[in-house]
Image (cartoon, rainbow, N blue to C red; front, side, top):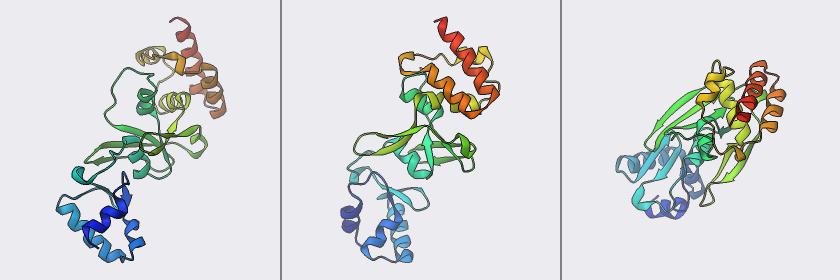
Length: 206
């Protein structure tokens, strides 16, 4: 395959899988060799095994970090601090993209930034939506309430009032506290039920 052929195949894709080359009749062994050569020449960027994107001069679409997070780990959704920042619920800038998965926890360092995946049991893998991040890049993202609930679940002593105050939650019109409490009850976690109850009392003080 020539470089121009790959541009025709992948030019409109923010990121693409090596399996895309199979559509052009390229064998897996030959595809691997060609992709490796293009990575070494700087024409391609490898995010992980089998996942690539075109380098800046050839790229038509700037990949969104949430879209890439979904691609890096199938069966995941963006949540925690990244989703809370996206919804404007916390004031901090979050440099790494944080996601939830039922697979093992891991951090992936890529040329486009770090991506953190946190494990939860399958019963807690729910309440996320698909959002168009621009340029037809679809990404699964937790709802505002589930983003906060995931953070409380994975943070030790999150039912401590001092920790809940340190979150400095803002733009509270984007957060439905009754729905948050309902989701906490759904998990049957005493810590989450307690934390959301304390949080409700703290928000009344604002």
